[in-house]
Structures are given as C-alpha cells and as structure tokens.
Length: 394
Image (tube, rainbow, N blue to C red):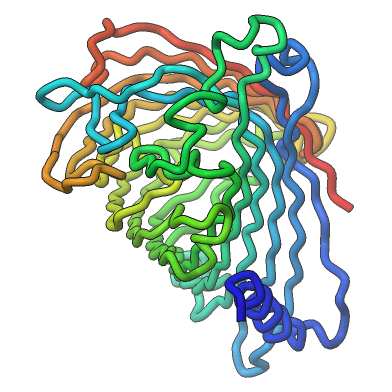
C-alpha cells in the first residue's frame, strides 16, 4: 500500500469514527472570519488574499454528563511573501552563532498555504468559580496543512535577477536542512496530532469579555515523519514534538453600566505566562520560533479598557496596553549538529485599539515600541500595523 493510500485510509477512519456523533443531524454551524488583505507584490495589497471558515456542532455523547461536546472544523487559505533569513541552508547554522554562515541567501519567495484544524472536545466537571460551565475541557486535534512555494511575484516587474529556485541550490535535490519546505518540488503536506486540556476557574463580570479568575491550558503536539510528513516531496518535512503551557489571571478593576445593563466603561487587569519547547529533527515553517531557538518563556502584563456598547451588545471599542517579555532559549531548530545553543531576551510595549461592529466588522490598529531586541543589532524602535477583518455566520 502506497503512502498516499495509507494517509487516505487514516482520514477515512477518522471521519467514520466521528460521524456517528451526528446521527441526529449532519448540519454544522458555519462562520466566515478573518478576511485578510495582502502583500505589496500582489495587486499592490488592495485585494483580499486569505480567509477562514469555521464549522462546529455541539452534541451530548454522554447523557450522564452535564457538559456537552463540540466537533469543530476550521479551514483557512492564505498567500504571502516570505523571506529567507540568514541561516546556512546546508547546516542550519544561525547568523548569530560564532563563525561564518557560508551558504545563505536573503531573497524572498511566494507561498500559497491552506490549513485544516479538526478537533473533538468534551467538557467535564463544573467551574467552581462561575457555578456553571465546564471546569476542564479535553480536546483531540488533527491538524493538516498544504503549502507550495514559488518564485516571488515581483519577478514580473524586476526581471529574472531576483529568482531563487531556477538556479542552485534550490533547483537541485540537495538536502536543504534549514528550509526543508523548499526541497524538491516545494510542495508539502504537514500533519500533527494534538492533545489539549483547558481549565477554567473564573467568572464573567461584564457583558463584554471581562473575567475574574484563572485560566490554564496545556497542549502536546506530535508530528512524526510517518504521519504523512514525507509525501510531498519525497523527503521528511516535519518530525517534531512540542509542549505548551499557559497560565492567565484576570481581575476586573471597575464596571460602569448603562441603564439597560449594557456596558458603559470597564477596566480589566490581566497577566499571562506561557512556556513552550520543541523537540525534533525537522521543524516545519509554520512552527519555527523567533531566531529558531527551541524554547520560549513569555510574560505579559496588560490593561484593557472597554468602552460603551452601542446599537447592539456586539458593538463596542476597547483599548489594550501590553508589556511583554520573551525569553528564548535552547538549541537551534533545523540545525544539523545539535550543538549550537543560545539565549536571548526580547521586550516591548504595544497598544491596540479595536472596534467591533455587530461581530461582523473588526477594525484594529496597533502601535508598539521594542526596547530590547535580542540578537538583533538594530536600535530600539517604533512599529505599527492595522487590520480590517470580517465575520459572517451562516
């Protein structure tokens, strides 16, 4: 049996196992969200180039449990312009390590990618703080991603001098350690399985999104080479294990309500810590850490001010101020010897202004100042970005 047939059989088994849960109805709630706009070399960035589709259904597989289960499928598509960093593509040696990195190439390429995130989640217990809702949710996930990389679109205006793949090393079958997703035909199918737990010890304090209490989560991802991660092309493009942990504490400072119970003004203080580490020989593009260090410890302190609800409960603005510190550590992802290690600190402050309109339109503007940039030799500096998103429920 070929590898493609084995993968098709696995997918059939997964779907057959899940479908009995929906014997009463196969209909799923549907939403379209995060319609994104694009890159400068694709229609001057004026056209939508990506979107997400969400499908979900709630049901009760265990009649003895108060909490129900959820089946979810998320589909997304996007195109982007990607840049090759200063890593030796034959060895994976990073630019910040001792000694020269000889085989580097600092050009950009065009990538088309689509993802499927499918999970089954069941809640257990009762949240002791809220007095309702699940205390813990257990989730099993299958994630699948297809991507194709090609020459940058700006070649149509700048000529062939900026090409990457029509000349060595990317036109050969040579192993490209630092960029395994660019080997061979540059078409790949990545898959991973995940087991996650989500713990809730908090209560809702407003009609917006404010809470008092604690939230915790753990995620374990497993993406071995034999899980269809050597199909397109015929080399291993993913082989790793990743562990992630998060702790979030939130406290509502004050709440001022309108006469009808809607929010007028509230303020919330929050704090989040996360820890993650990735093991494995082949890390795919979408799992690469900042500066390719395997471990990350983050700490974020934030203050959120939510303005008045108007017209409808899902129409309101908010401002969030964040102070974030990230400590990256450990070995280097996709580095062939496994002997290079590093540690770096990145710190910054940012503010986000967000306007929600009927849950359909999201207008977001962010500005920030990075005052510690780790290995980067550039000076601290300001940055900004903006986003217009849409959401449609069917």
